[in-house]
Amino acid sequence: MRLLDIFRLRSPRPKGSSAIAKERLQILVAHDRTERNRPSYLPKLQRELLEVIRKYADVDVSAVSVNYEQEDSREVLELNIVLPEIIAAVNKRV
Amino acid sequence: MARIIVITSGKGGVGKTTTSASLAMGLAQRGNRTAVVDFDVGLRNLDLIMGCERRVVYDFVNVINDEANLNQALIRDRRCDDLYVLPASQTRDKEALTKEGVGKVLEELAQTFEYIVCDSPAGIEHGATMAMYYADDAVVVTNPEVSSVRDSDRMLGILASKSRRAETNAEPIHEYLLLTRYSPERVARGEMLGVEDVQEILSLDLLGVIPESKSVLNASNSGVPVLLDPESEAGQAYSDMVARYLGEQLPHRFLEARKRGFFSRLFRE
Ligand SMILES: Nc1ncnc2c1ncn2[C@@H]1O[C@H](COP(=O)(O)OP(=O)(O)OP(=O)(O)O)[C@@H](O)[C@H]1O
Ligand SMILES: [Mg+2]
Image 1 (cartoon, rainbow over the protein chains, first blue to last red):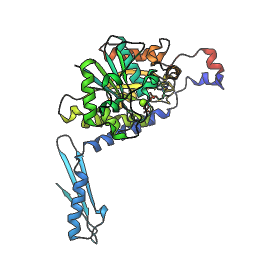
Image 2: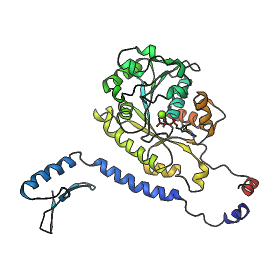
Image 3: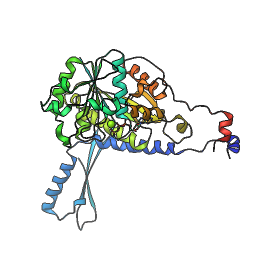
Image 4: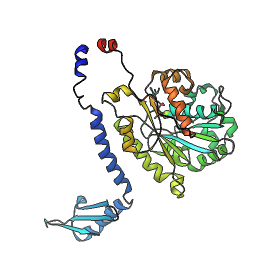
C-alpha cells in the first residue's frame, strides 16, 4: 500500500475534515458572538410582552418572538406577534 | 505591582494545569517572585503536577476562612526559591471561594509577588469566574479541535464582560492564545485545525504552540513541570512561551511536520 501512496503524493490531496471543522466553527462562533451582544433584557421583554398580550388575546407562548440584530450603525429590534384565529402575523419594527 | 495571570479555557482537560505549572516555573526561574494558585476546588491537581502534594498542610480556602495565614499555606518549591504554590481545597463546597475572599488573598499575595498565576478549573461556572475575575492577563488554552475552540470563544466573552476590569471599565484583560496538544503531522494531513485556522477564528495574540508530546505525561508522572525537561519539545515550547510573555520576540517552533525518511514512509503499516 505504502509504495503506491508515494505515487499518489503528486495528485491533489483530498480535503481533510479540518476544513469542515473550520467552516462550522466560523459559523458557530459568529452566531455565539451576536447572541452575546444582545441586550440582556430581551427574554424579560418577551415574557412581559406575552403577559400583556394575554390580557387581550388567548395566545400561545410561541406567539411572541423578539429578534435583535445589529447592523453597522443601527440596532433593529423586531417583534413578531402571531394572533390566534387571524392567520396574518403582525410585524412591527420598533 | 503584581501581575495576575489566569490560565483558562472553558473546556476541560486541554492543558491548563500543565501550562500553569510551566509558566509559573519559567517566570520564577528568570528571577521573578511567582505564586501559582490552584482554583480547582474539590479537584486539587496542581500540587501533584508541581510535585509538592505531600507538603500540603493548609489550602486556599483555609486562608480565605482565616483558619491559616498565607505563609502557612504557601509551599515553597524545592527547585526554585522564587516559586510558591497555593494549593486548592478538597472541600466539596464549590462556593467556598467568594469574590471577597479571593480578592483578599490575591491582594495579600500581590504585596510580595511579581506574578500570580491562577490555574482555573474547567467550565464557565463559579470556580472559573472566580479564577478570572481579578486577572490582568488571560492565557486561553485551546486544543485544535472544534469544541475547545468554541469554548475558548465563550470564555473570551466572559473575560470581556464579567471580570473586574470589565465591571470597572478599566483597560480590558490582555488575552493570549496558547494552542496545546498540537500535532503538525495531523495538521499537514488535513485532519486537525492548524494554527492559522484557530487564529483566524479567535484572533488573539498567539503566545505559543505546544506540541502533543509524550514527555508531558512523563513530567506529570514525576511531579516536574515539563518546562524543566530540556529534551522535550513541549518543554522547549513552554520556555519560548514564557520568554514571549516577558516580551521577547521569538519565532514559533515545532509547527512543521517532521520529514519522514523514504524508508519509514515505504514501510509504515
Ligand atoms: N502538550 C501535551 N501533550 C500531551 N499531553 C498533554 C499535553 N498537554 C496536556 N496533556 C495531557 O492532557 C491531560 C490534561 O492536562 P491538564 O490536567 O493540564 O488539563 P486541564 O486543562 O488542567 O484539565 P482540567 O480541565 O481537568 O483542569 C493530562 O493527562 C496531560 O498530561
Ligand atoms: Mg486543571
